[in-house]
Image 1: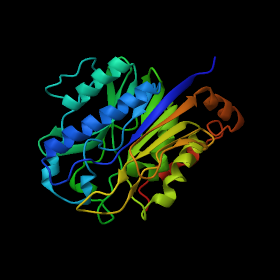
Image 2: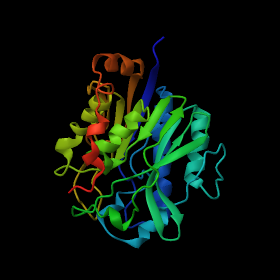
Image 3: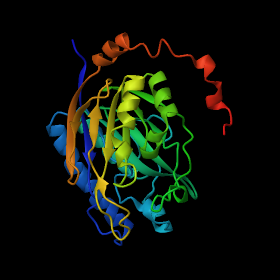
Image 4: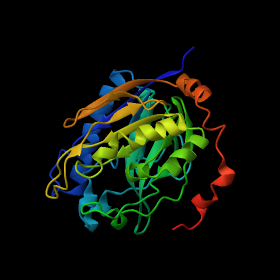
Length: 301
């Protein structure tokens, strides 16, 4: 019997002026995403991923300490019932996942220690259990409007893959997608679906959007769910967040794709048995030569 998993991605515009109180922005964006998550559930999704730091604007367009207020702790260990007072957003979506029997990948701004913050995504199982988290590894600080090192410490949890009711799930966040090394490690760790929640604008990396991640899917023979927000965010106007969230299969073929400019739930059926089928044709994991790849871990250049 085929292992078919219905996946969903949410792309969404910030719906509150960025000069509003941080708590108001966060509250409104969580409410909007819960509406869209309900739609995903109604469409039969078994696994759902939200966009990068889903509950606010892409505030890395400026360097302003006010956005530290949006960060919150996340559990450090697997737990069935996160404390809603300590972990409010995580606990809220654990309840949602449990109610809908849906796996949820939840990207938030994580506060771990006084003055220490990460760009993080939780993986929540369909029974509402917080399984663990991935912290964004590669942190850009190279283009006007992408001042991420002001906000995020580089991730330190490696490339975990989580056993869920919807399959083996890995996460890569936004800028990580430009680095094939971690994408390969996720494959070696057994990932069947890799989600990449992002915030990226036209005129910068759009020409790579449908190139890199299908290439990761082909090279590692797994499914990829790529998420991008939509709209323009004032006062920064660093460019158009162009949406076009999509799923692609282990052959790199796009299965479903969102629009460029509207809030949307993108849904696709993922046949996880296709992974074995493709790997039986293209024996990339058999034919790897890791003993020849030493330069990858030497300090070059």
